[in-house]
Amino acid sequence: MVSTLCVASNSLFGGTRSKLIPRFLAPLSIPTSITSNTCQCRSFSQTHAARARGVPQKIPMKQSAQPSLRTLQRKQLATDISKFPDLGVLQGTFIRPLWRDMPSIFQKPRERLQMEWLWLKSTFMHFVELLLYCKHYNTKLPLRLRGRKKMVRDLHHQMYTAFANADVDTLNTICCPGLARSLTARIHQRPSNELVSWSLDKYLRTPTTFFMGVRILSDRGVAFPNMPDSGVRQIVARVTSRQSTGKTSSADGQMVSGDANLQPSQVKQQNCTEHIVFQRLMWSGEELGWSIWGHANPTTVDDLDSPHFAQGLTASERLSAVMNSVKK
Image (cartoon, rainbow, N blue to C red; front, side, top):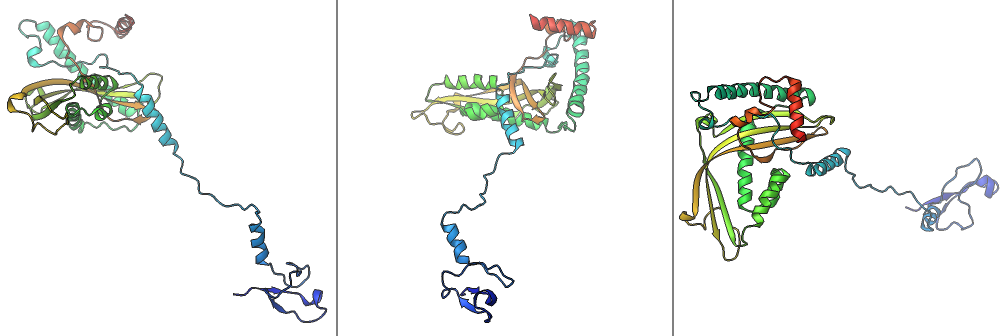
């Protein structure tokens, strides 16, 4: 479409009627705007020319997406947790021994009754601790009681499978730093052509696990002092299972899945009873996933003399004895 320039008759042509002059016929001396009472028009060609001469224009630039504050906090949290030391088994955790390892009710009735009483007492106290940790110190934190055994089975299987396959990345993900370093060091000590296989044949549903193969012995939640919205939840579980392990050498050193390359005589099958510690950290309101701390030993009769289990002590005396033992 041909653009036109409207010229006022009173100011230029002295009383003649205004004309519509095609733009390509209009002289270059015609001004772009006329100060009169008649209509005025803008020459679009001059606007384009001004832009072409390098007049800076404000062009909106699309800014790149910036990580949110929550994302930055999670990254910082992961960095802090990687430097966090292993907590170990929480002090005062009573791990019930197997029935055969308990003191005889006929030969040592006092010790047996004391251990039974400690078992009942610790079960109640630990549950109260867990309620306070989930509902008081960390508001609206679910208990997640139903999914504990499934979590134990999954992490237990993943840890041994990753260890057999020399999967260091998985070990660093599901294990605490101390356990991950220990398993990684054992992997590096293997010969380069050695292949290891591991399989879980079945869970042994014995009375020690209430015929389930997995039994939760302790479930505690403890808030960190002087650190708001921070703490740890720790579970001690007993796992009874039948496992098969084997080793073989490969000419090319390539890992193969399963134990297809192993001879039946090379595979060892054994029944295992393990007491495994799992922990879940809460750091500045952010709850991390479950991780494996390692294996723990059940409480013995010799442990009854410790400040955590000794009888006849008041709360202040027990706390003072614990502090003295820590200083030593």
